[in-house]
Length: 377
Image (cartoon, rainbow, N blue to C red):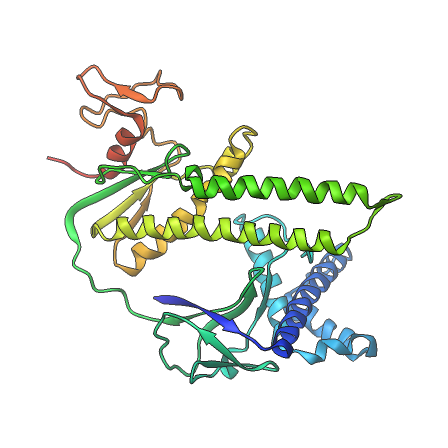
């Protein structure tokens, strides 16, 4: 199994300039590849990442006006075309949407690091064309000749290097009688069948609410400044606007980190129960996001990230991960007698059955998920 590690880099001023150039080259190469792919496809040809790479090397790289591309590692451009090929492969299989062009302001600032030149020694890591960069981490990094898919990215405040390496499954003794069901929601992040208390929604905490209030105030402030400095159809970006936008980015970063950390803590608490299997519902998150009244709340819950973490942590610990059919009536089925209540409405938060069971609707769903396809005596 592949285990991933994330370390925080501490680059010098000159190294940070090269890192930003690497991000720009990666974005430029990907956008060139996508534009060329569409151009070749319209001509009736069948483009690939390799053919576009050959065109790029024989045309763009040889022009003097693009000499800045040679200031960074050549593997960055090569990997950009490989990533484009992977994006189209996923699109053709129906897994993802059609690839989009990367916009400087919105796209993630990331670039590929050449794995065979990445040497970790004395709290420094060697990155091709950038040099030895100091780093901080709480992980114990194994000394290997190669690492898997190393990438360097910037989150608005710090630079990070992520990479993977092969590691066997975590040898833990599982409870062979414990099957856990997890029902995801909006009021609470998750209701777990074998936990007494639900996992709370972190977005309802005072800390997150204060940050969101501050974010809204800063966004209004910067919007007013843009209107004040409007010159015809163009907006003039002053130094004050740049400072405010930086503060806004840092608040977005802080909110993302709080939510992701909360999901890590929640998934770890479930894994520590040591079940032999974990059962989750297969939510149509794309369809749920179309509800304009709930879309923001659903996005802030990071439900897909919760499922992703549960999946890889279960795999690492040798736990069976099961996703039920999307139309499985987990909420409408009685967890005691198995009767299906077809007239159950979304506003009914308590499940009442003819057998005398009165239980929280979400808790009932989690219990049904825990029993999914089990042959009970």
